[in-house]
Amino acid sequence: MKIRKITCKGLRGATPEGGWSNELRPEDCVHTLVAVHTDTGHVGLGSVFTNDRLVQSALDVLKPLTDGESALEPERVSEKLHQHMFWLGRGGSITHAISGIDIALWDLLGQATGQSVGRLLGGRYIQRVQPYASLLMEEPLRMRERLLEVKRQGFRAFKIGWGPFGRKDARMDEAIVSAARDAIGPDCHLMVDAGGSDAYWSRGYKWAIQTARMLERYDVLWFEEALSPDALEDFIKLREHSPVPISGGEVLTRRQSFLPWLSQRAFDIVQPDVTKVGGLSEERRIAWMAQDFGVEFVPHGWNTAVGLAADLQLASAIPNTRFVEYLTGSPFIDEIVQEPWRLDSQGYLEIPQGPGLGLKLNLDAVAKYSGSLDWLEA
Image (tube, rainbow, N blue to C red; front, top):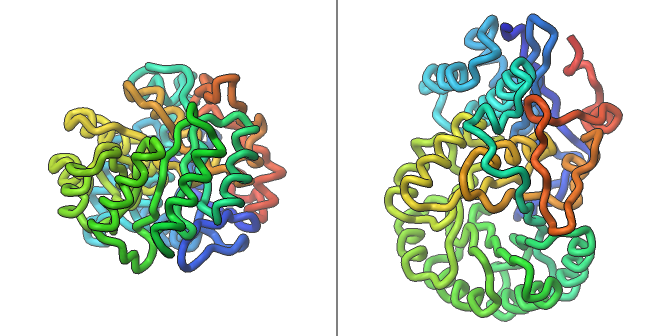
């Protein structure tokens, strides 16, 4: 089975707000689907957390390296792409695009062998995993109402982030967290994401440690992106002294970028994003590395149904993975699949057992948000 062509299409029209200082509009494109077409007629699906114009440009650059390549050797092919792209920059849009290709190649290998990607990645340690509902922070009253609404959907773990948190004052921060804990009750998990990778994030170590002490009072499970994503030394100090676990890593790409953060104990929990970091091949190696350093692995997943499917498969293959992220209220998660995601009575998601990613697209919804289906056709 050989690669015949690789196509992509951006999703628009329902892009969710990101809480960014330069806020996203529904018509903006930050999520792009990738299709790897083969000479046997099989098509593998991937997802990229990048604008479609950047993905298409990257695919054009990568084309001489992918045309005619094996579609059944995802790890080797992806590493080949990484190795030959050093002169165009390691990380960034090229690596993001390789992420989508890699996910699609694992999907193809699963289709060809009749096995789930999780089994091919090393075996299924678990059959289901707990998704945490990922929501933007809002003013306390609206935050409470939104969480109650999502809790009624069956979620039992919640991450609130960005919005006004860390951007007004300490009283507002605590009021939001207090309202959140009150809404979900004492028996549900609560995580807090400051969004320190936002443009011109100005909060430093002293704010972060003071905020961590406040979060402890509300039994917060982890404190995410409390600092600028380049503040390695401050993260090391924060993780050592914070009373709540510290997490991060969603903006890092390739395993080499994670090594100093893991080896120097900057995180209690590491959160690579499969649609940015280099795909399943790269993220699996990061998860293994995290295990060696005693760091918990929780995949970051603010993306699409294809990205969520990839996260679920990898979660099944990494021992002790407790959570996957579920972006709530996004049609790119909920509408573009034939079979809607369903939580069980305990708030868990079953990990698909079918071949490949175990995902079938709702083509009508895909056409609605991508504008056409020609990129999926032979």
